[in-house]
Image (cartoon, rainbow, N blue to C red; front, side, top):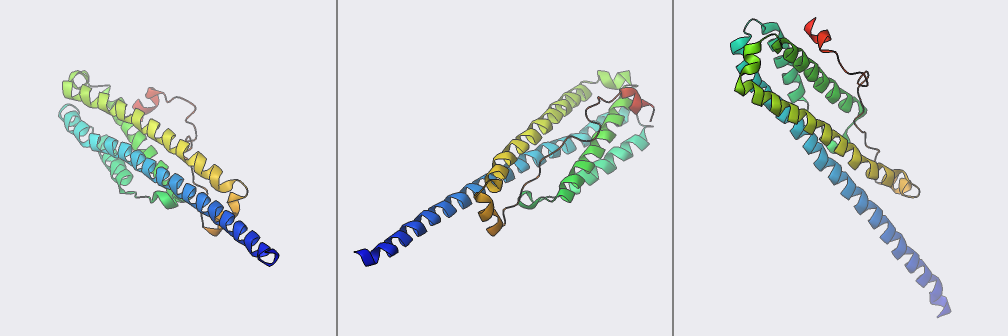
Length: 199
């Protein structure tokens, strides 16, 4: 029996190590999949905004047809914003920054467009316009919610792979820290609508 004792101890250690590795790996995969699912919700919210823009433009063009320069900027910004595709399992800092930049450009172009609309009382009274504006506002709120939820999903994953001793296995299995959405520079200051009207 004594001669088998080292083998039994080794077997117990091997089984425990296997259980630990399996648990770490499966938990990391679960968190990673949850992040991917939430990223799809972020993209869906942004896509909803992009889908609203053509309808908003159609209604607006009837009332503000000489605002073509502003319309063109919105269309260009929308095109750039919808052209970016990101794999949530491998988001690089550059990809996330590029995604945020094009979405920010679209937000800025929309803000200028909405400031222009302030000059057209007939447009603002149009029921289709009012409904589209309400939908746009709900969509902007949804974007904010989905971005915050994405950040919330990233935290447990990052904690899981960065805490010792899991960080050792994270290196072995190539689990890397995920990035979060960050507030844009200057976002702590509310924009003044007069800034848009004067541009």
